[in-house]
Amino acid sequence: MSPAVKKWLCIVGIGEDGLAGLGEAARAAIDGAEIMVGGDRHLAMLGDDKRPRLTWDNALHATVAKLAKFKGQRVCVLATGDPMSYGIGVTLCREFGAESCRVIPHQSAFSLACARLGWPLAEVDCMTVHGRPLGRLNRHLRPDARILILSGDGNTPKEVAAALRAAGYGDSKITVLERMGGPMEKRHDGTAKAWRRKCGDLNTIAIHCAAGPNAPRLMRSAGLPDELFQHDGQLTKRDVRAVTLAALAPAPGELLWDVGAGAGSIAIEFLRAEPTARAIAIEQSSKRAGNIRANGENLGVQKLQVIEGAAPAALKGLARPDVIFIGGGVSDRKVLNACWRALPSGGRLVANAVSMEGESQLFGFMRLKGGGMKRIEISHLDAMGDLHAWRAMRPVTQYRGVKT
Image (cartoon, rainbow, N blue to C red):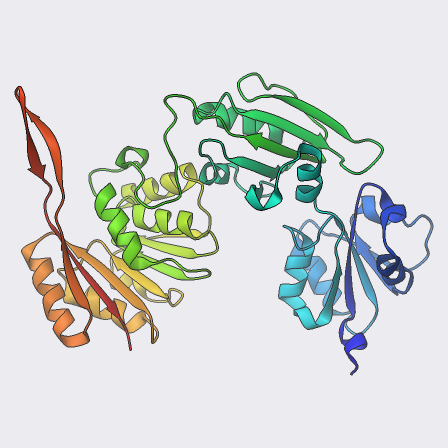
């Protein structure tokens, strides 16, 4: 089969200016297709074209399954803007393979918005809340950040403004750009604290963040303030957490197991540091598991799975991890051994202990498996009447190992 025939599925990005705004390659792909696929709005641009058409089902996977039956025929999918920017192109290339797909992108909403605002796209955080929780916005909030959001519908700008006010970012500037690139394009400007406007459904939101004096600093570097987490005391404290995240060294696409997760702070900061990663938090307390879910939502992470159960039993059947952190249960050798067995060659294990029993287990484990240990000792300045003195935190013993 020739390369041309292999790429049976062509995904064409189209803008608000319709067919008139397409280049020669995109028009040729549309004209040469045997089957057209898209939403009602895009297919309507074809007029009374008599070729077979397929519209998207509410369950997207159902349409994808139908597409598979047309393999080998010339199929053209019409998509909004850049199909590889939170678009259908990502799903189709993953499903059928890049070798089967030819993607012809149009200008993305992000590119158009930056052109309207004079923002450098490389310095802007881009996200979508279309079909996704609004809480993910919280991962991006920090002083002077610039954020672009693909809306879910016309109510999304009001919801975003309310979220900004609740987070202490009420002075942030908001610009909503409707139907960019077409004759019905509109622009609305305002601030989060005053925004109450409903907009057209096809809109993109631009935010220039302005933090209020009491807004928490949600920086992406490890070591968020402890008070940002809901917890019952079972929390890896801020300074120790920063050292632990450095040891875990998050990398793209990795899966972390956070065993004995407590408040989930390690898993959550792992995901904030590397948004393409995934994390499974294993916690036997249902109340703490609820805290983990709430903390993940409040701090804007995605791809966080919470498993209620005690290790090692709760580890059975989970996706194989690239890296494991054990924050609770290190005094049980069965937990250490089960986690080590679950790691692939090159997988990393980091474990913290505060008790002599836990430290003893880690030392014995290191002698068998290799790796190294560190002791983390931190003191904070504390008032002592009219004077001041250093108050030492309980020392933390940390094991770090790589499976060969």
